[in-house]
Image (tube, rainbow, N blue to C red; front, side, top):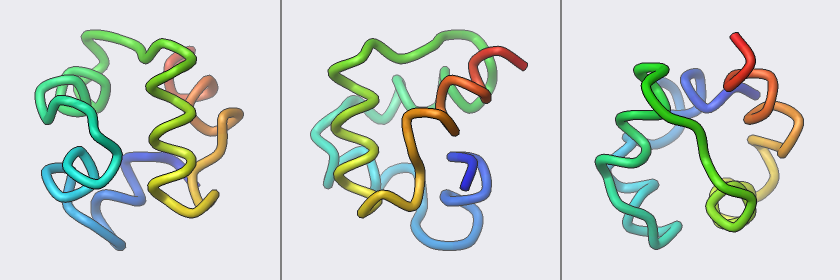
Length: 64
């Protein structure tokens, strides 16, 4: 599942950022296409989403 879909259907970006332990602005920049994530941040997001968003999903979104 893409992160954009996840924050629309499962959990708001702000709440995800708090659970994952990343800055809300980092998720916002990612969703707007202004910035990507480092590997450590991707791992936190994958863990926080329970694997619904995978590394492959995040990389594919960054390449778009």
